[in-house]
Image 1 (cartoon, rainbow, N blue to C red):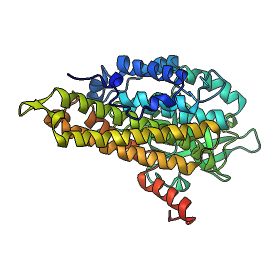
Image 2 (image 1 turned 90 degrees about the horizontal axis):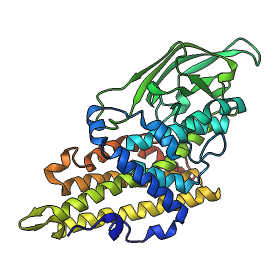
Image 3 (image 1 turned 60 degrees about the vertical axis):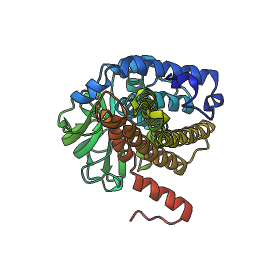
Image 4 (image 1 turned 90 degrees about the vertical axis):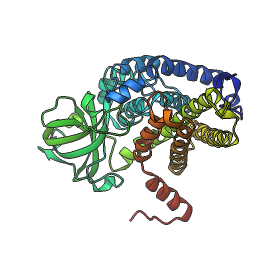
Length: 396
């Protein structure tokens, strides 16, 4: 008889739920229910058709997961652990949906909340928290991915003094949600170093072109962006952001959420493989009754439990205000790497059926290849950790 993994315990042998408060468990359940009702029934179709369900944005705002960790301006003001739990449940549905929440909250809204003026915060954050306005975060360029210090997008002063505006020229690539964004957070080089700018949708000279023919993140949007003589007023500048500390602060927020989210994709893959192995008969008995299958399932569960415990530890550190960037890098590096292995192994238990969209593991595996690349590749996080433990930078 097939057991329900959500109630019988095969997904939480260590009883990690005992480490969560009643409020944390209740929030997780709300997001889990939303994922079951609004994402999982349609995700195969969205993925196959390459459709991003933009209509989910206000629903996610109502759910309270946009800018979830931010205080004030209509933001939910929840804890880091609560945000992590939400990210895990949403990515159990699909990485593309969790990416919407990450780009909106961890990147665009965090940039405005941390570095913006009071006027900028009042103008954008309440509507973004409600999902009425979508934001994007334009950092990566066609020739500057892992090395943002070499960005070529440039903003020059248009006029003199504090009342002068800016002229923006350049290009960005792989910018999530850019074609549906109401406001773009754009990072550009200036004579004073890297600065951030808010560029509203419809600004003349801005072109956002969705990238097609993707084999990953098909239920999401990533774009090429070009800026051709874009004129911005002085109010476009994020006054508090100067240098790469501005975008890196936001990236660390996103990396933290990924450490949780990847475990959601891994868990969903594992649970699909477990259920299938208990129902699928081969040679007169369930696949789950064979030693090789059990070894695969056990190896998956061990890494999911370890990765979830790691994410929870990072969340407690973050809530205590003691988390360090290298700790976030360790979580992102390990959990995404292991999640890909788990999704691929889960697919093998499904046999030929595993290559169809009737089952989630291969979709998760394909998506996780993007997750593995964005917000710092394996190589970048390895070098961050390598510098921390040796004291020697090896990026160049």
